[in-house]
Length: 197
Image (cartoon, rainbow, N blue to C red; front, side):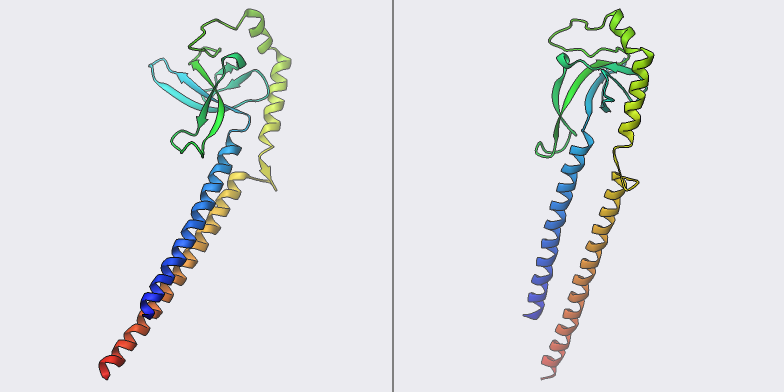
């Protein structure tokens, strides 16, 4: 009876710790997703080889964004759609983000329902103005320094937290297996006593 009780107790401890860990991981995931999409757009690019790629791009406070390949693309509120990010997670864990469709190396987004062009020679000149570029660099520099806490980035704090949780889980598992091995030794002693009678 003691072995059964010890096994049930160990199972209950493992299940409780697993549920707590699962809810902590889900909460941290939702928190990370919400922090990740702040001031960003989700861009779909139609590549020259007819593939579609996706990027989550930060908005630097101006009317254009820079993709991972270094190209500048315009933002158009009238052509903005909404989608969920990141793909592959359940909808309750995803965050709704503004979404734009681009053809690679074409500066303006397109709307499949409305194909009118929004760029003119004057607007392109205003976008590439030197004063506008200085303001964009200043905003990007300020945005890069916003994600730090106590001189460290959020990802560093998340890694440290995960290491602490993993160490705690390892310690609890060690305690459970140690308790189970002690109880199996006690059961073996009881069986030896019963055989001796």
